[in-house]
Length: 232
Ligand SMILES: *Cc1c(COP(=O)(O)O)cnc(C)c1O
Image (cartoon, rainbow, N blue to C red):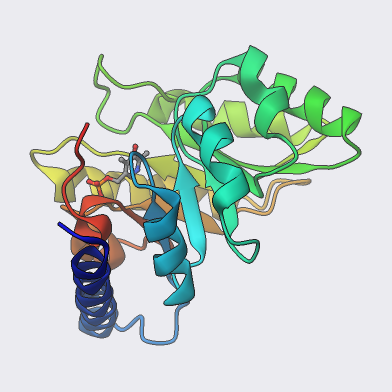
């Protein structure tokens, strides 16, 4: 595929995504809600990420530290970057200054190290706790049962602010888990825990974002549905 035709495809996909999100919002009375659409950039060359940014998809999700470090100098500077991939403690220092949120916080110890690195850099990092809503062995994240206690503990940690939750539900029976995650989010949000500001439910990818909007998602993360099938 040459550059122009890939950009044409991305432009078409953007229209489809905006249409689908608007329709999903209308179908459940969420017309006035602001639902963020994240462009998930793994394996996508920066020129196409920048094209999506130029079309208004300016929130970028990065999965891999190494790949991000190679690409970031090529990104247009009005892009907002958030980290969504598995993160090792020793790599936090490479991204702490260039992302606005870390969504993939899967343990208390990782969150505390993010807090330490953020303080060193004179900032407070917004985080989402990743929730393993389906209890799958193959996925990382807090178990639903341990989530509330973890949020109370992280609320006491300097250098981070818990803003909500991110999840990747099991592929089968997705709506059951979307609903379970919605309830968990609503319950913990309603507790109004001091030093937290829980208003983000990052849920829904190319295959399930329409359903996710119906179950209260405030941010959908779309890769293949936007940029096309991944090569690697
Ligand atoms: C890859 C990825 C996505 C996007 O997945 P698609 O199915 O390509 O839309 C969303 N969230 C996370 C955490 C990812 O790793």
